[in-house]
Amino acid sequence: MKRLIEKGLMFGNLVHVTSPVWIERYKRALRHLTGRETELIDFHIDISGYSPEVGDALGDDLYLNHAGVNRQFILLTTDQVRAPLLNAQFSTSRDILRQFIVSNEDALFALTARDAVAGEMVNSVFSADTVAQVLSIGRIEIEADTTEATVAQSERLGQMIDRFKTDKDAWFDDVLIAQMIGVAKQTGDVTRNPVRLGQMAFEQRNFWTSHFGGLYCFRGLETPTVVAVSDDAVVETDDHVIRMSDPHSVAAFLQENDLVEPIVQARGIDAAAILRQKMDFIIVDVAATMGEDLSGASRRELRGLARRYRTLMPEAFTGLQALLNWAENGGAWPRITSDHPAYFYSLRAKDHSDVGLVNMLLAEMAPLDIRQLFIMHKQAFYALYATWPEGKRAYVAEFLAAEYQVDKAGAREALFGHEAPMEVPERLMVERVGPWGAVKRR
Image (cartoon, rainbow, N blue to C red; front, side):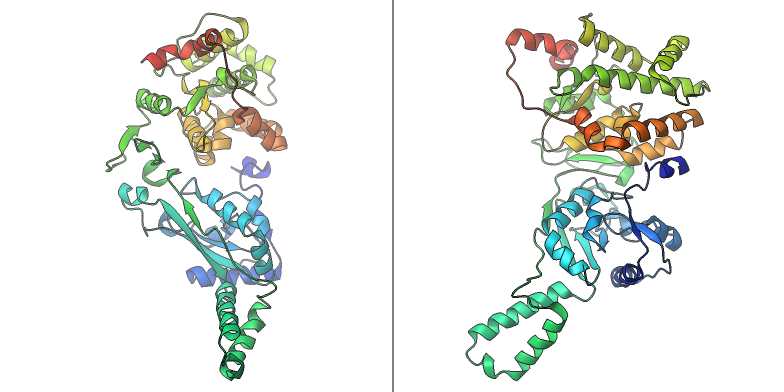
């Protein structure tokens, strides 16, 4: 993993904490939330304030996320909004934290100028011992304040000010006046600079969780569905349950709910370039397995390797090759149905509210596409990276550093961006459906 860290592909964009003031605030917030302490004076934190160095020192990577639910957080600066979320147990956690920070940026900026903000993402369960408990999490509420309770004290001061203004005898209440002065010394003038935190509740209907070997939960659909990554996971629920090892059922679920589209049918992307890149990744996997040195391998050299190991190329490669020929040269329609290994490599999420979740699922169904896997499902990427031959690790790290890190937003737009739909004549629509007609009829 050292190579990934050096290239900023792992633990990238973390906030470096070296300031004595920040360190003291972090320690105070850590004691406030967990009762634990750290003596480190140099560490990095993610969007939630989790530090891999502190986790290593404590021997607990979940020191801010006990049992993988009700994640706690420590904010030292609003700049944490640009950091990743490490050790995520739910796919929605980073988005919720990011929305919370963005929606309360001014208030959080004022609060973190004086103290750390400590909080918790609260839901209705305190453990994830059963699938039913995980699936019952439909609403996340944020509880947050400084370690000195500035927000609570501001609310209290506001109530006292209202009482002072409306109670005709308040002018003679020396105790009330003294209390107001005492609280104001901590909060400042809340009439001119109110300290309030808004947007504290978030819905979580469709999400991925790492619990039980990985679950993709689609609770907001007409037929609530859970896609289980592991065949061994005991999924006791009234929801429809699909196993990832059953590609037919996964494909039917995606099609019936209109969640995906063929890459060659998508508007606003270079489908041929995407297909070629997916084929390159498959070549790399085969060549690395055969012990080839892939350092700085060009596309021309990869084509040579594809010819050398043509008899070893998997069906996913030949399927994508046929699809590319159909898209570029008007070749015969390849029969790429859900039982074909190339099927999930040929899809991407349609334009809907769960684009990220569906692309995450597709990435896990098509793990040889290392770029999509890295972008959409880093935990799965890191787990597979540890099992790859050294040649593949080196190639993938170089590729991602050169082709993705330099323009992350551009790469995401090129792969997953959507343009406004355009009306298509019926004749052309039939031609565009092409290889997926058999899947839909089925």
